[in-house]
Amino acid sequence: MLKMDAIQKRILQEVAGLHEIPEGAYNFRVNGEGAGRNTTANIDIISKENGSGIDIHIRPGTKNESVHIPVVLSASGLKETVYNDFYVGADADVVIVAGCGIDNCGAADSEHDGVHRFYLEPRAKVKYVEKHYGSGTGTGKRVLNPVTEVTLGENSSMEMEMAQIKGVDSTERITTATLAAGANLVVRERLMTHGEQKAVSAYKVTLDGENSSADVVSRSVARDKSRQKFDALLIGNAASHGHTECDSIIMDEGKILAVPSLEANNVDAMLLHEAAIGKIAGEQIIKLMTLGLSEKEAEEQIINGFLK
Image (tube, rainbow, N blue to C red):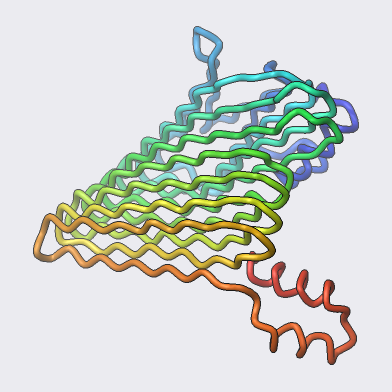
């Protein structure tokens, strides 16, 4: 049984979309301690000996199974660093749902730094979903610093959905990936900051194998006095395809810095980057207002559609 109170269950629903115990493998972490775990015949979850995290082993050929590993912090002043390693066997096809939510009602800062390392064997396929969320009435900050390291074997693929829409005061997301021959990486990031929040997203993708490919796309909105930085580097060491894109809406006194970088070390490396930063077009708001929406409602409608 999961050992969580009403606030913790609400955060769990926000970061993992769970209203009840999921089917399949899971490991729930609440305020630095385990709150529930389940394994299956094909997916094993083992605590690290030093207590700093877990190892997840997915057997070769595993299909149509999922792993949920959400983290909830509701104690003000709690700071932790957790290391989770995923070993995905050849020909497996699984969904992994992570994410962290912090509810801080105190004066001390709360922080979760999660280091996730993925090792995909040949032809393995993973869909990885990670959502970050903050809430609470306290003056203490809600800090999340995720590190994701991906090693893709030959002809393996990974699709990553990264979302942070509300409540996180400071975040530095660092993602690195190395791709073998025929491997494919797709990243879709959605980010919104407000108040005086700060957010950094840094990606470094190395295309080492022939016919490897990567597509890294970020959509973001910076409101109030918040600040964002998007830093993406694609390195083509073989005949490969890479694309990175940053598409952002800036509002109020927000600031956004986009730093796309390409490094081609092979004549057949085809790399492309795109970056666009701008405000909401006035004609978009006017069009929606003619349909009966207020200016604020029209603005929110546009933002919600942009971040889908």
